[in-house]
Amino acid sequence: MRYNRRINPLFVVALALGLCFLTSCAAKPHEETGFLDNYSDMKQTQNFHRFYIEPGVDFKAYKNVIIRPVNTSYMPEFKWYDVKYDEKELKEITNYIEQEFARALGKSYLIVNGGHSYTGKTLTLELALVKLAPVDAASNVVSSAVIMMPVSKGEVAVEGQLVDADTDKTVLKFTDARYGKDSIVNVKDFGKFMHAKDAVNEWANELYGVMQVGEAEREGYLGGTLELKPW
Image 1 (cartoon, rainbow, N blue to C red):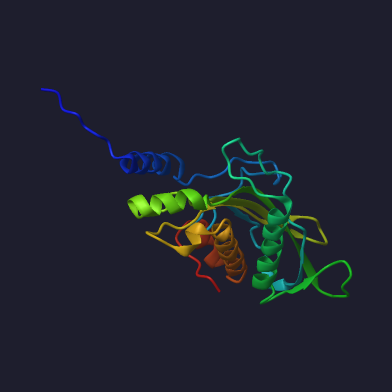
Image 2 (image 1 turned 180 degrees about the vertical axis):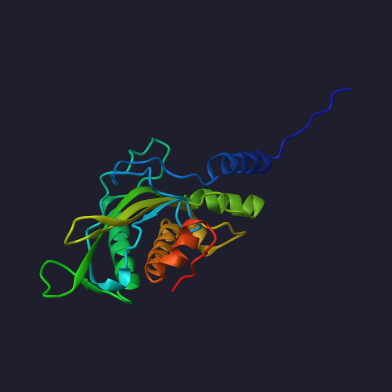
C-alpha cells in the first residue's frame, strides 16, 4: 500500500526560515577593516568585542570632544541577495550615530568643532560604520505568521577611537557588531534600521560609562569582570 503524504507549504516555509535563522543569525565579530591602525593590543569585554584603553589616561582631565563625520568607506559591498538601502537612508543612520554619541558624551564634555572657541584638553572621536544589514521586514511578516518568531534581525558594526587632539595619540579604541535583540514579536522587527539605532544608543552610553570610571575599575572592565550600566 502506498501512502500519499501531502506536505504543508507553510511547514516548508517555516523550516526554511528556521534553518536560515540558525545558520545566519549567530552573532560573530566582523573582520578587521583597517580603519584602526592596530588591533593586536585590544581585548574582549562584556560591552565591546575589541577594546583598548591607554594605561593611566584620565578622561576627567579633558573638557571638550570633537566628533568627526562617520566614515562609511570601510563598509563591504553587498551581495545580490542583501536588502538594499539608498544614500539618504545611510545618511540618516550616520547622522543618528553622531547625534547619539554627542548626546552621551555631552553629559560631561563640551561638544565642539573647528568653529568653536574653547579652552582645555580636547579629544577627537573618530567613528566608522563598517557594516549595516537592514531588517528584512517582509520575511518577518511571514515567519511571525508561521512560527511566531521574526527571523531577520539585521546587523550593525562599528569601529571607533578617541584621539588626544594635541598629541594625536589614540587613548581609547573599540570595535563591535550587534544584531537586533531576540524576541517573540516586537514592532522593531519590522523597522528597517531600528536594530541599528538601538545598538548605537547602547554603544554611546557604554563608551561614556567607561570614560567615567577610574583606572582601578577599568582594570576590572578590561578583565571582563565589570559590567557597565548605561548612564
